Amino acid sequence: MASNRVCVKFLESFACSHLDDDFFEDEGWDMMNCIMQTKGSPIPKIKDLKDKGNNLYKQNCFGAAASCYDEACKLLSLVVGMENSYDTNTLSELAVSLNLNLAACALKLFEHEASKDHCSIVLSFFPTNVKALFRRGLAFMKLNKFLEAKSDLEAALLVEPRNKDILRELCVVKDCLAINLNGKRSIDEHPLQDSTGNGKVKVHDDEPL
Image (cartoon, helix red, strand yellow):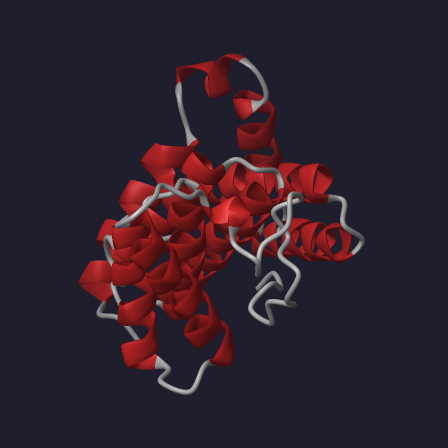
């Protein structure tokens, strides 16, 4: 468990990344009123949105799942602003899982820069989070940034040395790096990848949190 101070800093960064001026011109005030009028904690609503997103993800409805996660993130960001209202560790765990779920959706939707950014928010404060390292590594692979992908996957492997998914993807990255010394090749041309971006080999880390 991370220190309370780290969790607080992470939540501040998380809130800033999910709220902007346009938000308050659109649905922000409705969400704020919802929180103010809610009897009890709004956390169950956030968890319900996350669960709904998880179910949609498992049905391969990645855009709809991302919308649920995004709404949950915005609602959670508003809750973060209510100082001393809720347990910091609970909020932090929710924020991590929502960011990583958005990263997973972004990978499926070929939004690799967005996936990388979601993971980077988590890794800025929790540098040994395996799912964040693995998913950012996959995003870097799709962006043909093989050195960055290799670095993330090797860091993930230090935490989980027997993780077969990490080992397999690391082999792909090293292979592409070796080939690129002689002739440029994109990750989609690798025999373990397919044109859909889903890969011919099942990735067991491919589940929402």
